[in-house]
Structure formats: structure tokens, C-alpha cells
Image (cartoon, rainbow, N blue to C red):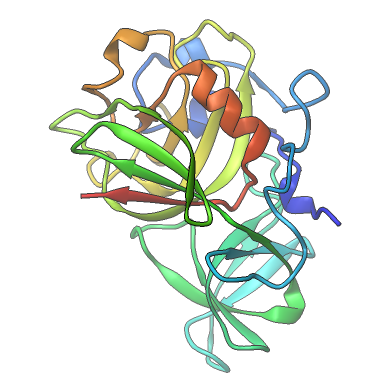
Length: 252
């Protein structure tokens, strides 16, 4: 049975999502939810509400309108995070450790790599065998289904002054730009990480993303403010096959 984490939507402007990327704010002044024209759920078995098996990752989808995050198991409350998020997507976390009643999760906050604990009763668990790896040195991405590579392609990464930071992230939302010929291409996945240089950008918090492009000639180079650009064909494939919460690892 599919869970809410597979439903993708955007309630805010794409300018606020792609705040660590190239392009102008004017080119992203509007966005639309991913709906019937682009499928509101990825196809295939990107995520299932079953226990995670070997090589799979667990994704925690918040049940209510907010969730308490703890600094340690049975510890003091650290923060409250609301759901849906600022872009209209159900709030999800990537599970790093499952200890039954408690889950350690990767948080979409600064600093990158922040973790916290949530109660298992406050979330719905699903699992995905997919993961995305970005090799900055080779300007290449690979999508794995378990141990099997199922999609590969070239990427553009951040320029020297605004690098794409290495680390472990996950998809937080999926939006479809109104202007399919604009700087952000056919789709954009928000990431749980942020630019290490840009604390704010175009009115937003410097959030990173993986998105399409209208300048395919720049793919294979350092060209962005920190986001990862891929071809429109590749981002469309990801939009159809990968769930919100899918882990993304940026190497080296």
C-alpha cells in the first residue's frame, strides 16, 4: 500500500525552493503542484509500507500536523517540526536507526547532517530500495535499485565559490515549474541540505536541489550556486520513479 510520502506537491513559489541554484528569481516566480499531467505518484515500487530489507532505506512520514524531535531517546524535546512543509509536501525524514519505539532520523535543517530522534508512533514507515549517488569529481549521477545501477547520467555542480557540499541527504519535495523551458527544467527535487556558503538566496534559506535545466551544454561543468543540474530526460525519469524521502549521497 502506498503512503502519503509518495504524494508530491508544491504550495510555495519555486524561487523559494531553488535558493541555492543558478538562474533568476523571475524565471521561478510561479510553480504548480505535480498533478495529473505529471502523475501525482511516482510509478513502480519506489517505496512500500513494508519493513526495509537488505539494501533498503526506511522513510518516516509524519502522521499529524507537527512532530516533536528529541535530542536523545527519552530525552528533552529539541524542536517541533510542522507538516506539510513550506512547499505543501508531507513532511518526511530519512531513518538512520530503527530502535523500535524510537527512530533516529536525518533532519532537513542546518547544519547539514543534523540528526534527531522521533517516536515511531508519530510516523508511518515505508521503505525504498532506491538511492541516488552524485560523484562531484566525475560530474556523474547513478541511481541504484539495491545494488543494481538503473540510471546514470552527467551532472553540473556548484561553482568553486558556491560548491555543492558532500554529504548524505534525502528528497524533501518535488515541484514542476510552470515554465518547462526555464532555468530549472522539467522538475526539481528539493534536498534536505543547504549551501555552506549562501545562508540566504533569492529570499530563501539556501536550500539545495536536484533539477533539470534549459542549458544542457553546462552539464559536466561547475555551473551552479550549489544545486545539481541534470538533463530534463533524467529529472523526468526521477520524478516518475523516485519517492520523496529517497536518499541522496553526494560524494567527495
